Length: 356
Image (cartoon, rainbow, N blue to C red):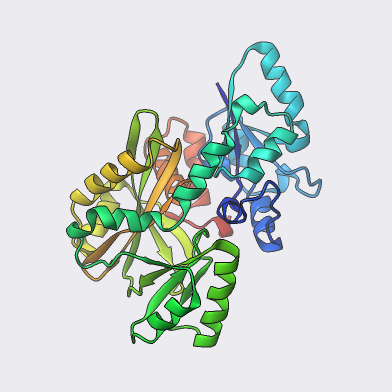
């Protein structure tokens, strides 16, 4: 079965807009277009990568073109998708559409370019994915398992400025987050903005997304995540990923370390125990797996020895999944040529997409 991969990093923002047509801002669009071949890092040999129709985007000039060639993957522009799918149908070959993340805009784009509705998720399914992708889902985790993590307060959802004013006068510091955003965007720290700026940002976010999530401000000492796949048989643990964030919480890159090395780093830094994974698995099995099929990532952080086991839950592909795949390829990959290419791309065992 063939797969058509597509890197659409704007998916969280498209979920926030919840419209059939969403246009990302210039910066995100440039990031998406430049890294259109990013699925070369996790795609299977001889599969396809969907790239934009923009004639300025020339595959040979994009990062990872060499790796794509080594894996015999083929780029296909949106305008050529219908014809190619027709050819596959004639030969009886089935296929899957595998974007970075699903949203209404991407679904409509696939329909417009010849993908049969039978190959796409329903609008009812996407509505549920959007609901579960809201950052309030982490609040549900703490409602069920908070007694196991007494040092971590559950996030609070606010829908009006009056409640925000009350919080801001409490004397505590907070991290404010838009319900749908990614990679540290849509995040404001009360220690880094004036109250007037905070109120302005929150008012705008409530208008556009309906609420704002409020978390206690952690003095983070380590950022890591658990990576999963959800399917009809439940959830499957893929491994841990270790990543780096800026002081403002913006994603900066993943470390390409073996699972043994990552576990060792985490165990030395904080009070890690396997029960965290067990509680996450229970939660995902009951609240995510019945409604969602695909990649899942649960971001965590440490403040000294204390662990926050559920900062947020991402229902899409994640850079953590990518990092695990790269590392496995480097350690046990079958192709020496692919291993060599990845080693040259990431000599310092560090994966930062913007530096490709």
